[in-house]
Length: 61
Image (cartoon, rainbow, N blue to C red):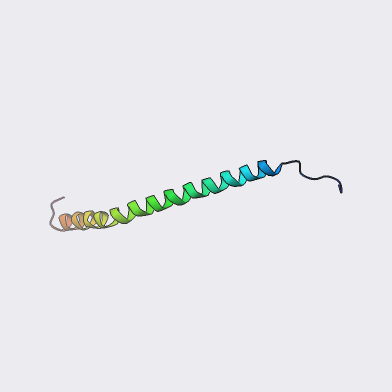
């Protein structure tokens, strides 16, 4: 066991690291876009819930 080492080259390892960093950046960008959309939709969702409750109390639904 003492003479065996991995046979991956440095360039291959660098490519793997580069791909992993790119995937991490894409995930980070997508999460910020999704959180931004949810931040914009939250007041509209609250208004819709208030309207549904108000209409239900007034027997309009």
